[in-house]
Image 1 (cartoon, rainbow, N blue to C red):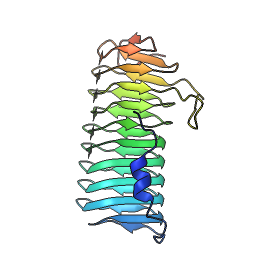
Image 2: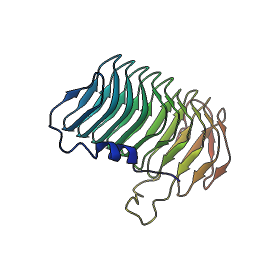
Image 3: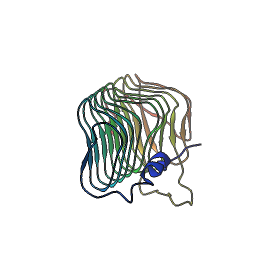
Length: 225
């Protein structure tokens, strides 16, 4: 079952509302805020970090158990690590060599993985571009209305699912998602599309079975369309 709401983040934030506002530096232990950002310094080790209105920045080589925000971005620095990352309204970025053991999820926000970034679970959103650059995702890519770029030597296990929003709260059909699997990329598992998409697959990419869309093959570094 695909979970588009980052429930782990909401549970983490449930105890935040009696916390004072203002920015917080987390250098050991857990850290929570309501109206403020959280910063985990380079090389630090922290527990759960969460805020309601604010961003979370985890610097290079730092470690956190989990990080979640409602309104704000989450940035995991180079070679930093976390068990899970989540946002409701905000982008999530993983720098070079960053590692997340389990899922990474946002509702409204882009998701970008740099070279060597690694996610052990699913990468899922509702709206926003998902971009992998020489990265690895073990649990598949999931979206409703987001574009997807799997570029360089990226490897995805668990396939790709573009889900039909249906008539539920998250029913977004504002544009046709554009899916690009670039040269050298590997997507193992089913590529399943429950709504109309534009699917471009390089002649030098490796992909699993495709249902719900017809792949447009292209040569060169990127599709011309």
